[in-house]
Amino acid sequence: MKKLSLFSVSPIALAIALSSATAFAPIAAQAETTASGNIGVHSMYLLRGIGRENDDTAVQGGFDYSHDSGLYLGYWGSNLGYSYDKNVGTDPGGNGFENDFYGGYAGSAGDISYKLGLIQYYYINVDDSDLTEVLANVGYAGFTLQAQYLATDGWWGNQGDIYWTAGYSLPLPNDFTLGASLGWYTYNDDDNSDLCWPAPAGCGTTTSDSGYRHLNLTLSHPIADTGASMYVQYTNAGEDRTGNDNYDDKVIFGVTYGFGL
Image (cartoon, rainbow, N blue to C red; front, top):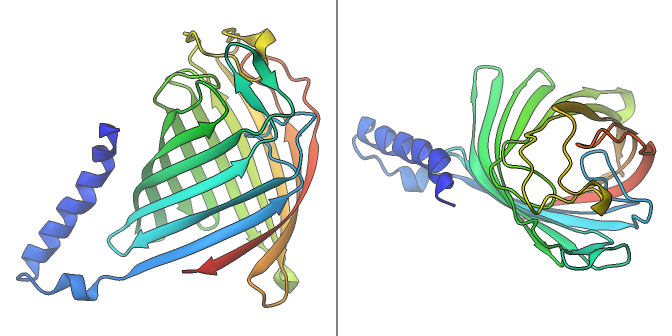
């Protein structure tokens, strides 16, 4: 967890420098914070483009807090519809739950936005999955490029795996929004002893240096002035780290609601 200092030191140092430059002006009185929440119901939950045949409806939600210094913190959670015991295997009817805790620094330089942060995953009833990722994101004119570097070993990855995404959001007439996201993986093939995702048959077998993971196309629209929106998403599934590309494309429906705190 000490890796958090890589991203928390810079904004703190910046705040100190700013306070000195303004002769110790009452910055605390000027500081602004934003807190929000979200909840959604989705027809299924895909893990970076790949789902399970038994995936059920997923209820997902979270909270976000941001400070005008650029610091942010958040939480996101989802039921999974399965569980995993390393001594028994995967239970398709299990009650696993994913918790994501994240924080970092976000800012901008002209029209370019950027973000640096950490994500700590904590799973209930899913063994060997409490991993840590380092995130870097840059955006410009509706385009985003993001890299998530896996910093620890576990069931669903090796330290050194990188999940890349490139996305674009396009406003359409009548308040529709079209989003596209392309996912790609680069893999560390030095397999750890816990690696066993997506199935026990593929335990510890990384045969690809990299691979296409998914293409998501999403059409969304707000529901009147309720703060809620609905969406439909088509996902073209790619391959996993074993080179297996026998995954079905999916169509997902969902309703989300965002609110201030």
